[in-house]
Amino acid sequence: MKIEYAPEHDIVNIEFLEGVQIDESVEEDGIIFDYSKDKKLVSVEVLDAKKRIGKKPLDKIDFSVMKDKVIAV
Image 1 (cartoon, rainbow, N blue to C red):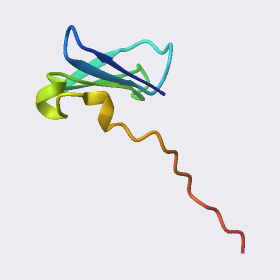
Image 2 (image 1 turned 180 degrees about the horizontal axis):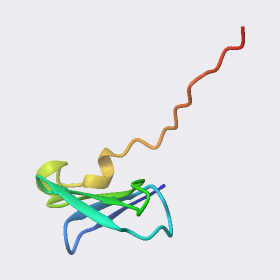
Image 3 (image 1 turned 180 degrees about the vertical axis):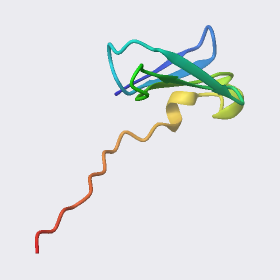
């Protein structure tokens, strides 16, 4: 996963699948969802990020990783 902020365009891009071609993009209220041909979510773009997230969009990112525990019975 890669998270980028482009200050010149005020866009935050969250890429889930690297190198996968985008087949379809759907915009909902200033957020663009990009899908592959097999309908997997490739990336999410947040337009006007400063308005939606705050003046420093990358400061809002929590880099902690949480994994579910599996308990064998």
